[in-house]
Length: 133
Image 1 (cartoon, helix red, strand yellow):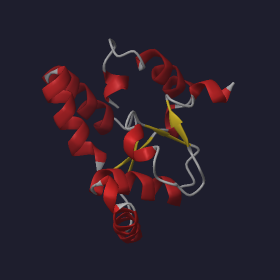
Image 2 (image 1 turned 180 degrees about the vertical axis):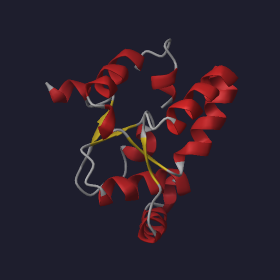
Image 3 (image 1 turned 90 degrees about the horizontal axis):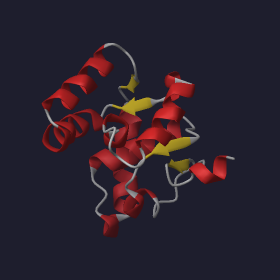
Image 4 (image 1 turned 60 degrees about the horizontal axis):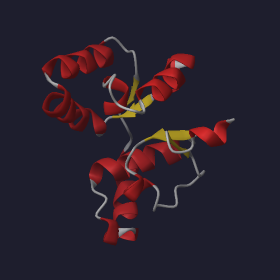
């Protein structure tokens, strides 16, 4: 999300192009909202954080508020990959992606997402962009 918010990020244009093709396919798991807000404010400034909040409030992105089983699946993922120290946010993103049969996950965190065997094997964008052609 930060790369999408930051016009100067080297991945911004590619992610924006994908987002603009079909914004409805971008689903934000609830767990990322505070993290994106914090990182946007501290790394990009309060205007970027406010723009993100506006986008969420205006339903520019669909928020997946989750189910109880997402947290249980996240716990299982954290235990299975304990050496990675995934944490709640990454594990919930994976759990929601699995439940929704996501075709892709937008992440630059390849250390975590690249190491986990995610059910359905979604692409990791922008890393896998060249595989889409």
